[in-house]
Amino acid sequence: NTVFSDDIKEIVIDEQELKDRISELGKEITDSYEKDDDIVMLCILRGAILFMADLAREIDLPVVFDFMDVSSYGASTESSGVVRIIKDMEENIEGRHLLIVEDIIDTGRTLKHVVDMLETRDPKSIKVVTLLDKPDRRVQKEMDADFNGFEIPDKFVVGYGLDFAEKYRNLSFIGVLKEKLYI
Ligand code: PRP
Ligand code: MN
Ligand code: MG
Image (cartoon, rainbow, N blue to C red; front, side):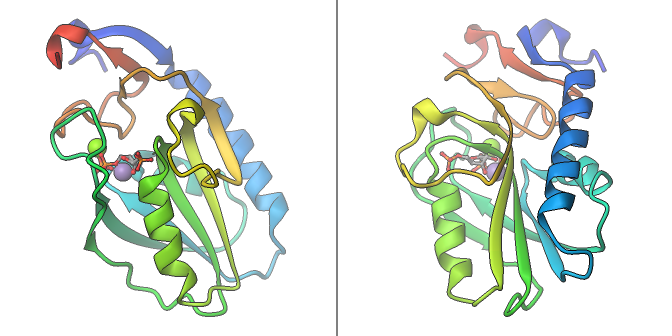
């Protein structure tokens, strides 16, 4: 799609690169579990929704879908540091394998909050897959994903689920916004 072309400074990851890497991630994830494992895939709304949908179809195992709405950014390019659970997940994860699906790990605060909370529910395992990782930005040093699509530099990226003030999520690639739009 080209609807936001005028707002994008550069494409960081194009549609084909996303597709190819997500296919590889699906295989890695499939290989990391047993055939009869009971797996709950948890999409962290809203950013991870497109990644979840495409990744799930590359995982060759039966999985259950669930969703949790967590927000920290609001209408800013900077994480506020306050993580709010807007909607909890529905499934009981006790004794089950939990696969948390994120679009990006930035400071790591969102993931830390979610993992700490869900560990208390005694899942059999917790694994994290993120499409993007900005390791340079990490505040919560120990928060790394088990599966990581792309390491990216510290630029504000949008598209393929990632927003700026709720816009740009439906771009089919990951790109950098022109500075004049948010400075
Ligand atoms: C973004 C992104 C991650 C989180 C990463 O979500 O989708 O969930 O921030 O940042 P962190 O590692 O610094 O915590 P956001 O809170 O913007 O909500 P959204 O997914 O609805 O856009
Ligand atoms: Mn998010
Ligand atoms: Mg956001």
